[in-house]
Image (cartoon, rainbow, N blue to C red; front, side, top):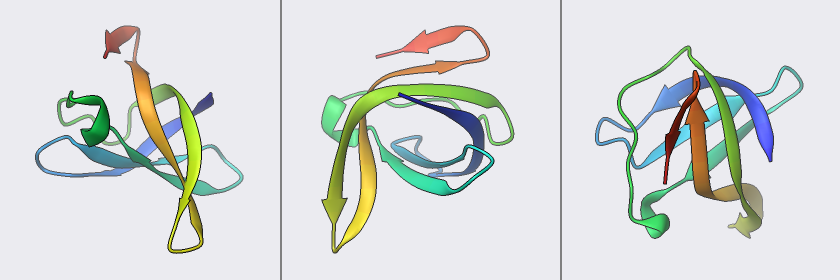
Amino acid sequence: MIEGKIQTECPAGCWFIVDDGVASIYIDIFPSNFVIPQKAGSNVRVFGTVTKKDGDPLITGKIVEIDGEIYR
């Protein structure tokens, strides 16, 4: 689980970047077959699996909570 703010988001809502105050990480929710609305700047909590792509860490999100609303 990671918690932070949404920095940047895909226009279609299938990926976004979260800044937790220490670093930023790419969140991919496309493989989980859901999208989120445009919420850049909002507080977010992401539950998922950490993997690597091209040597960089990313999270495949399974559940996303934005300002109290849950997406899955």
